Amino acid sequence: MILNLILIFVFSFTFLTGLIAQKLGIQRFIFHKYFAYIAFLLLTIHLILKLKTLHIYFKRKRKVILPLFYFSLFLYFSVLFLGIVFFIF
Image (cartoon, rainbow, N blue to C red; front, side, top):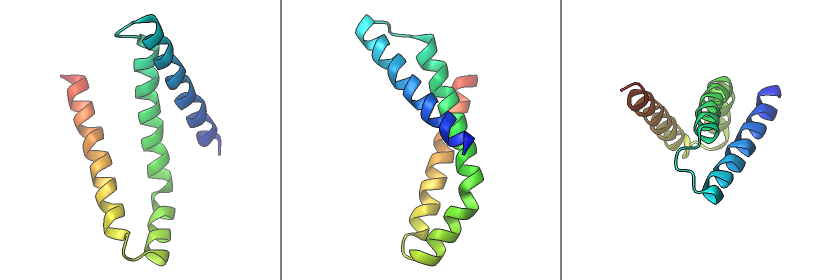
């Protein structure tokens, strides 16, 4: 519950700082950049915590969508891994 509220705040602040950066013409606005990283990290933690619940839901209710669920998780964590690699190097 607290993580959900923090995610709402972080996504809102990321959006607002991006809007401010666009209006001011700043290409590399540091607040927007780091709040986006924090949002991505918190979203990953949120997904990991909710993974069992999501698996049970898709397994019981929507048997056709279960492979799509696993593919989307694979895609999300692949993007996360590539982002970390590009951020480090």
